[in-house]
Amino acid sequence: MNMNYKENAREGLWTNNIVFAQLLALCPLLAVTGTATNGLGMGIATIVVLVLSNATVSLFRNVITPEVRIPDFVLIIATVVTMVDMVMNAWMHELYKVLGLFIPLIVTNCAILGRAEAFASKNAIAPSIFDGLMMGLGFTFVLVVLGASREVLSNGTLFANASLLLGNGFSFLETTLIKDYRGFLLFALPSGGFIALGFILAGKRMLDKWLQTRSAAKVFVGDLSTAKSK
Amino acid sequence: MREKAEKKSKFRETVAYQAILLGASTLVATTLLSFGNLATKDEIALRIEEDLKASLTQVVPEDLYDNELLASTISEENSKGESVLVYQATLNNVVTAVIFEVTENGYSGKIRSIIGIAPDGRILGVRILSHSETPGLGDKIEVEKDDWILGFDGLSINNPGQSGWAVRKDGGQFDQFTGATITPRAVVKSIRSGLEFFEQKKQVLLHVETESQR
Image 1 (cartoon, one colour):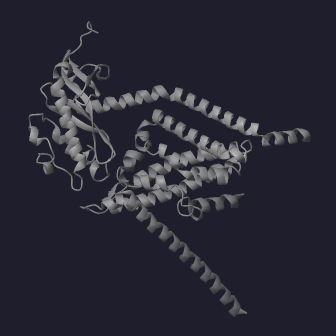
Image 2 (cartoon, rainbow over the protein chains, first blue to last red; image 1 turned 135 degrees about the vertical axis):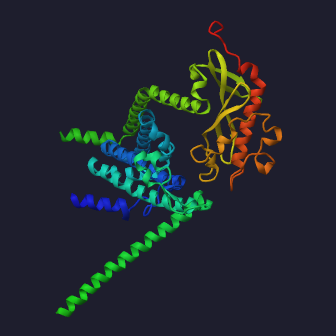
Image 3 (cartoon, rainbow over the protein chains, first blue to last red; image 1 turned 90 degrees about the vertical axis):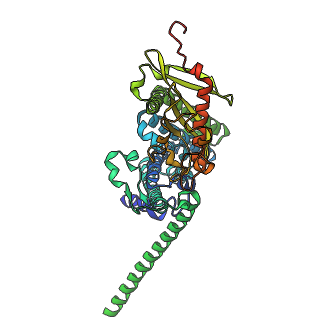
């Protein structure tokens, strides 16, 4: 059981990451990652919805038949998103003013439906919640990395307005990396998002390949040394 | 026992089950949403009112009025034929300022701003309520990002005059931003139209309905 959770965390964060491996959720990803702070906000909102929708789908997995599962999943996700939207607007209004923009966008996130279909509909409630959390964290990781690189390239700042999202205690995050930077508009626009995402995806592939050859080389060296000793 | 289970699985395969399932889940979802809406409706209305109040006090100093701004409104038609909701700020039943919203199309979508005007036609303050301009370029119209918007304080329709009410590129006196002209142009235009609206409807806007007339 423990191994399963470990494997599941690895998949969500890296090997089967929503963006890196599945290339899902590109619409909200490219729309909001103009800055690292916006990426983080979208990530947090997505984690909440993904955990709740995975839990609900898993709870009703034995009642829902395969023939009508898609409309039922869509209904569950839409309900969860709307509830989160209303509750945040009413009782977490300051946070809502910052995140509010992102919450309706989550409905366009096919990764939520993807996890409901691929995982939550086949697994018990606890692993489903864990899967939602890990997939959400993996998505947040990409959002922040992409947001940060686009923000640095377009504005020369990092985590601008983070205190609006996280509270004044986090104002230390707001840094200006390049002083008197004249700005590079392309990266603030969605087209720049596509370009930056392309480079990040290529970088991830290169890193994976390097890790693979390194571990392969280790095995090879190990074989040689055992052969010699014989 | 086994018979019962078989019966159950058979029922699951019928079309009726699918229909009932979808119907029931929709019913549950709508019920939940209705209760959610009921529980949050008043709270949300309260929050929106607070937000509105906060933006009203940004454009008119608090020592200028002693009335409940949100309760003292009148509706007037502007030159485009749209009705504008005007908030009257009064001190001892004399109008000291009027506040209303102006909208103009910017680079991408509508720019909504709120403007406060003194009885003599001077601008007390302008703030952007919402916009979807390019981040890092057009968003300098927000007071949090740049103090450009404060440059309108104290001006009126005759100061700087007709030709002055434009961005520098168009021969006016207001700065555009590097890489963004359309956004400030739209804001200047909307403020100017707001001032024109005030001049046209001055009589009505500065008139206070007393309690007996209501």
